[in-house]
Length: 70
Image (cartoon, rainbow, N blue to C red):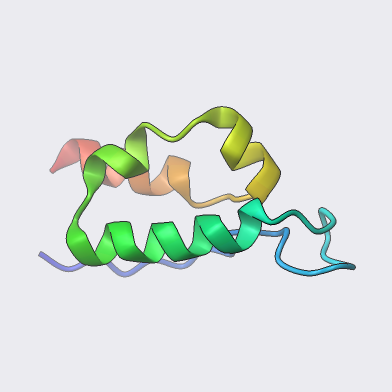
């Protein structure tokens, strides 16, 4: 199975980012990449909304829909 994803992931990676900086941004991107590599679907679909909000991400909803169909 192959997934081709296009998403901005976190929008909080650095000062001056569109949603401002938050340390959750880098942590989210690192964990997201690892979850894809290890096919950790549970991590993808059970993320805390507060963590997602701080990371200012926009990829989980789309990937969750794909993962649930598999």
